[in-house]
Amino acid sequence: TIYLDYQAATPIDPRVLAGMTDAFRRNFANPHATDHFLGRLANDAIEHAAIAIANCVGAFAEDIVFTSGATEANALALTSARSECGFDRHPTIVTCGGDHKSVIDQAHHFGLNVRTIELDSNGAPDIDHASQIIDGETALVSVIGVNNENGAITDLASIGAICAETGTLFHADLSQSLSSVPIDIEAANLSYATLSSQKAYGPKGIGALVVDPKARARLSPLLVGGGQQDGLRGGTMPTELCVGFGIACDLIREERKTESSRLAILRDRLVNGIEAAGWGKLLGDRSNRHPGNALIELFKMSAFDLLSRAQPKIAASTRSSCSSSDEDYSHVLRAMGLGRERAERCVRFSLGRFSDEKQIDEVLATLDGISHDIAERD
Ligand code: PLP
Image 1: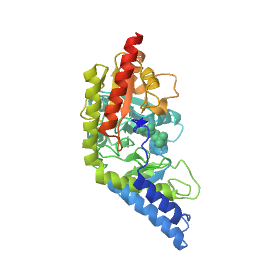
Image 2 (image 1 turned 90 degrees about the vertical axis):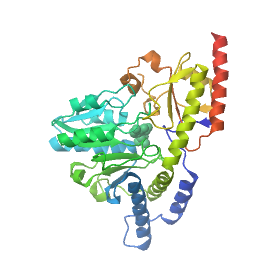
Image 3 (image 1 turned 120 degrees about the vertical axis):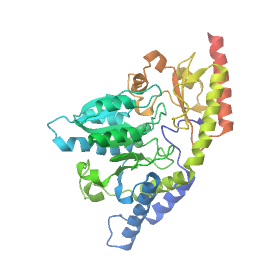
């Protein structure tokens, strides 16, 4: 199978796996049992991982709160909106039409009053609209950094500037950004940033919220218990997962720049092949986009039809896998102005570290075969 679903989950990098295997053997002690040497060893391994993660995004190790993944990190960030007014009022949060369900649905779950920034023609939050709806009444702004469906890159610096002017807390979900674009938390004036290991060649089940010390007191823990992580997230920390996430971040810091250029070339090879054959077109711009994302609107078949016929050869996605159980169609494509019929013709190919030219050419050849079958059928 040619795997082109990296935005849903990345395979673990063998170097991460090797480091984790070592941690499973050596760092089994409870990392909070610092009365003894083995506990301290595990604790040091976590500290080392936090440094690696922080270095990747321009933060400090003490700003990292480990979570079970991006969903939990997003939920923790959203507690900052409700804490100011308590539970009986409905503070306002500004999200965007491209946000992940773990932000949008969580905001409703917390009883927040949600205002939504519209998307621009590329599928990123529209900055003019953001400046109209963010105001002194807004408790928190939460936007996606790089979109998981259309790959659009959000102009975080501009939204951060609006938040600075209005004195609003600012959270970005950087799950898809970590492996693909440079991140500077301070320059974007971010109070909180969500990171995910499973989108960055690390293990599943671990993520982090990066917390600006000035905004720390506004958070309330979702899990309480042993008082771990300075009371912000109770529960014994999973040393081996933290270690894996840390190694994944070290690799990203070393390789992101060259890897992003390589991926953009490969992505363009795929898009050019598809467009030249007249099967479909890329939705949105090639610039300001995740270098591995190719969201294609097919002309003559549904994405489901294409992917069913391409099994087991190609693993790609008809929509974000996190919303695949919804009956309705993708809320992101809807926010981009697509009706159901067009949305059903959209397929997301997402490329990553282990994609290569040979695979792309094989995908194009497979699509060619499927198109001929469909043309004959019709
Ligand atoms: N945020 C974004 C942008 C995502 O792409 C995803 C996963 O698809 C999530 C949050 C949720 O991540 P997890 O399921 O690992 O909690």
